[in-house]
Structures are given as C-alpha cells and as structure tokens.
Length: 269
Image (tube, rainbow, N blue to C red; front, side, top):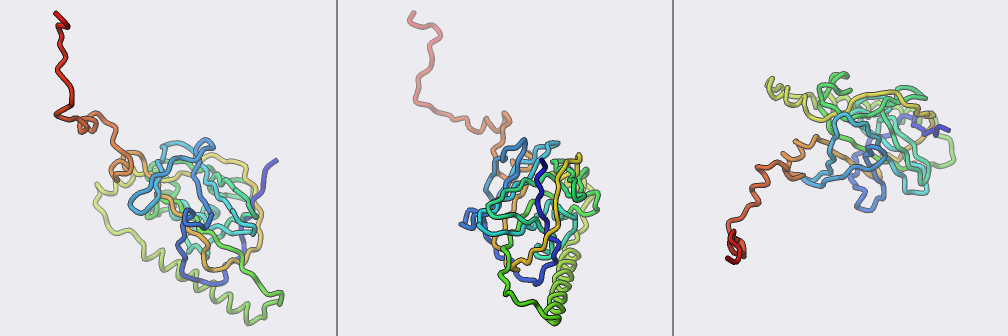
C-alpha cells in the first residue's frame, strides 16, 4: 500500500525574517540524505554541514517531525522547491505537511499527485537546474520547518482576508526581487566549464509517490532551518573536509627519526 503525504496548497499569510535554528541546538527537527536507505556521513566545517555526492547514485531526503503537532516543511534542492520546482521565499513555498511524530522520505521531484522523479547526484551540466536555466544554487539542500498557527475560532472578516492577500503578494514580490538580485555575475569560459563539473541533482526515473493537497496556516516565523551542502569527493578534499588519499599525500606523514636501530641483514653471524 502506498503511503500518502500531504502538501500545503494554502498560500502563506505573512512575510517575516527567518529564525536560524539547527536541529542539534534543541529544536529536534532533522534532515537526512539517504543512499540505499541509509543516511550518508556528514562532515562539519566552514560553518556548514557537508555530505559527499556519489555520482550517479539516487538519494532520498528524510524529514522528521518530532513534535506532537502538525508541521509544514519547505524543502528545496539546488534552490528549487521539490514540489513545483519554483524559486520563492521559504514562507511563500508550497510545503510538505507532516503529521505528529511522522517521518517522510521524499524520493524526488513531485511531477503529479501520484508520481515523483527520483533525485540523483550528477554533474551540474546534466542537472535539472541546468535544464531549468539557473544553476546559481546547485549543491544545496535546505529544509525550513514551520509550526501551525493557533487561530481563534472566529471567522476572519473580509478586510482581514484582503489584508492577508496583500501580505501574500508582498512576500511573493520580495521573493522575486531576491531571485533577480542573485543572478550570476559574468565568468570566464574556463570557470564556467569547471563549474559544470561540480555536483548537482538530476531528475531521474519515475516512482510512485502519492500526495494530497491540504490547508495549513503556518506561523510565519520558522521553527527550524537546516541546510546541507553536497560536493563530489575531490571538492570536499579541496575544501579540507576530508583528507587526501593519494600516495603523494601519504608521503607527508614520513618522519626523519625513529627510536629504533638499523636492522642487521647478516643476523648473528
């Protein structure tokens, strides 16, 4: 039986600055990247969390709700919402809704109410972001968790509804301005060619993944924000996050002196 996860169709009602909390700081929310059903190792450094992108391998993203209430999660890969592939603010994004204590493994880009296309690690030149025409934010996975707003039982008036619509439009306009301002600066052809070899996410085979639309009125202040950077091994080595493994690097461990004596090839003769 295929499980169904809900995605939020409701537009957000306000725009607010994001609160930056990490899962290990007590919020309890977590995000993991799984390959073959197992979380991949994480590397902390340069103020971020990194993982190794395994070229050609499919992956899923595990979202966890540790609370006793519903939460909504804005999830992006390479700067694109995995539900509709749009670029918006986290608040304006269409979101996944997790039930209390629910864990959901998101397998790919949601292309319909029944089907997703699998995530897989590939080079930027072959990525979904490249096909969409914007590789500005490749190499990043980000999840932003929102709690549900506690509402009074009274029905909102028409004026309140109109004000809500204005705030939504303002949030969307802000997101568009941000997207336009992040346009890449001109690069040399050599730099562009190198960038095309870096890690990004492709859009792969179809897989059954049923979803339902549901209403969710989120608190505009995020409960947690978790970002993961991913790179191929050579780039992780260049960043100093994992050690080099070639023979030349191993020679750097050589020492001039040891507390030992020269071996005698003639034994006790």
